Length: 87
Image (cartoon, rainbow, N blue to C red; front, side, top):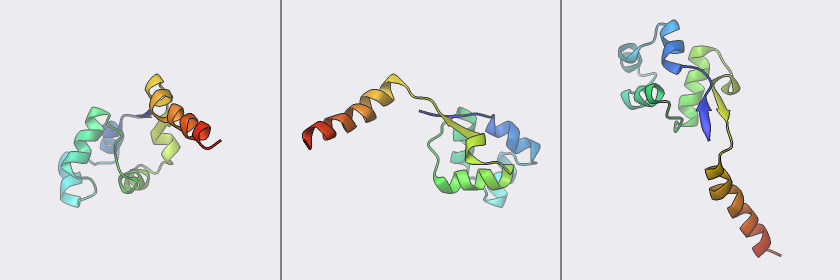
């Protein structure tokens, strides 16, 4: 599962970007700003690229991966199944 390492809204505010300025400048849409507020990391690579540019950070400064039981069940177990099926 991906999680933000930082408070995106707070970091954007430090750079003078709030919902209104993001919308007017078309840097981030209203839906994307809502995702930032809610901690939703389901963003495109283009949005991540914009975040990196605006915040002058690397992706690793913004997001982190935390393995969960759900990840193990949904992803890793499927990889194991395919591996077993190919032998």
